Length: 84
Image (cartoon, rainbow, N blue to C red; front, side, top):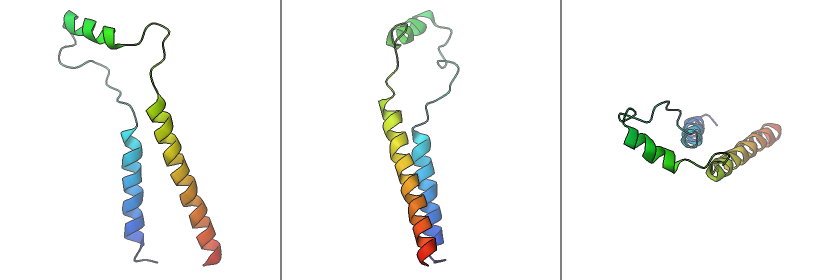
């Protein structure tokens, strides 16, 4: 059992990094050209219309996948602790 512990730790760390990949960036500015009006217009054109909703499909799918992996991991660990 102790020989598998580093593998489980590495797998858990990898899963955490994959989960963090789905976290959106929280940058407050639009970059080095934030004072440029033409740059601001280009970014405003790329934003959804007022009242529109951004596409969150990839976040929902990614969150669901990792939630499922976590549930399977917990179930497997619980089952294994009762049989061992």
